[in-house]
Image (cartoon, rainbow, N blue to C red; front, side, top):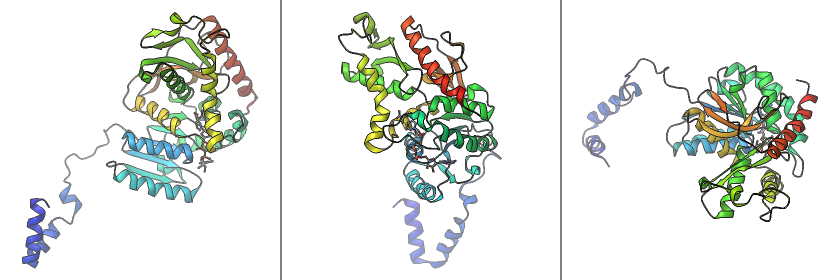
Length: 357
Ligand SMILES: NC(=O)C1=CN([C@@H]2O[C@H](COP(=O)(O)OP(=O)(O)OC[C@H]3O[C@@H](n4cnc5c(N)ncnc54)[C@H](O)[C@@H]3O)[C@@H](O)[C@H]2O)C=CC1
Ligand SMILES: CC(=O)C(=O)O
């Protein structure tokens, strides 16, 4: 018991009236928390909203809370009951993690004024199916959802998670009319993490000692830029010039298989994936909110980079800050890597072209 509380209790036991006086003194919030400035509208906005509170959306909100990235979270879902249950769960969770204002609703006022809106509403592929099989269904969802987000959060930065994420980024850019720097896809940030994880296992070192990029589609046509892979600052191709090739004795090509099979593999085991993508997207949010200018592999319009001529959306390393995508890093890829990136672009562009938006 602290000193003032013990005094208060003593008084309340001995004398009825002083207790009442004390009680009245502290009954009004406005007297305890006294106004200091007239309005705090100048405080930078860090509200993050999630559209679609399923497996991914829930993992995202939980991770945002754990990371204490923002003190204002909004979310929307069409499933009112699940939404209400999760809203209560998150509110109680936030009590243990300091102050955070959390709003959840089936209507879009919950996301009003957001700095960042993350899209995870829609369907996921059935185990064993490609992400591209859900393209048309998720286009329908985005046609419904994006205009509402634009209306309620017109200045936000949009992050796509919904699959197939690269084409969804293209569609959202078209529907929203937002400038391309404010629409990005989680893309191969997750695949790049999976690559670096595998490298760290192989060399028995920390993941931050491993570099390297997975680029192109977030899917089977992605490619690993082997020439960029480093461990402890050393280019692996200096030690093994055959890295990633068919006659590579270290069989690095199997790491590409590993990377592309993680999503489908986890999906087969539990029906969905959520934890890795949640942290991957929170990492992008951190770069935006704190203007860190971190370089991450995210889905961007790739036309004009590496000789790509089609208006296709692919993952390339991008510098991310408070306004979204600031710059794109054009890596010095080998000819073979460039060809693989083009193949991935052609593959996605075929799907993109068939769409009616
Ligand atoms: N890019 C990536 O690396 C990853 C992408 N994903 C993708 O994220 C998406 C979501 O996956 P899960 O969360 O597992 O699915 P889920 O089925 O658990 O959640 C989807 C949520 O969207 C809601 N929803 C559907 N239509 C809506 C609408 N019109 N408006 C508002 N809410 C709506 C549903 O009620 C549901 O709560 C899938 O497309 C999945 O493939 C998942 C993991 C990783
Ligand atoms: C589902 C998905 O896209 C992934 O975990 O890679």
